[in-house]
Image (cartoon, rainbow, N blue to C red; front, side):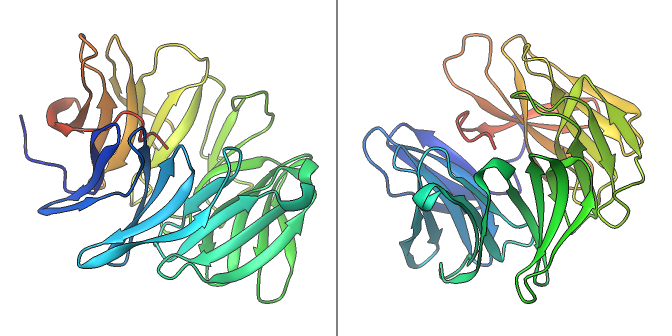
Length: 287
């Protein structure tokens, strides 16, 4: 057993989950049958999505939990890479509405209505610009909420992006799972650094130098660690599946996996090919 994770995670059991971050442990308000996904850290707090109600709640030390928004099952919520904004895609009155909320207060910063058929996905924010993927037709967009401008920057659908590391993952078709994935920089989306039709990007390391991927075929989950140009560095496997959870550092990743008896689950820390158990985790906290 190694040291506890150095990034926040969710631990507990059904109806009683906490956000754990070092010595900080914060209870998440939920029903007796509830569970939660961690959206991420935001300032001195943490945003979680609580199920089955699909509420977004902010918890923080010394403060009462604050409900930011109610969602439905199909509605999407993501925290920006800097933790400042909550990006929502909701469907009021049969419209697709992208919203930007202040992650600390829940105050709405911006709102834009799109065609439902476009199937947009807000992914990250830089300044007043939201990076978005769209499915019909496939493209990558930027939306400037200050000027209202919508600009197409690529002809494939973005699905993972980080302005902080200038990294972008797009795919060229959609049938429930990404088809062929293309890795590039947001700043130069037309220049592909790596292409794969058997894997999908789970996340980029904080410095953007490494990629964590998962299978694209629906088989037993494994995680591959690759360089930015796709060179295979390490493969992580377990008979019951392994999933990418979070990067602790630019080179150290946390994985989630069931042990062979499937009685609990673990966060497993891996540095290159060397791995150790870090903490009991929460398998439903998969984002």
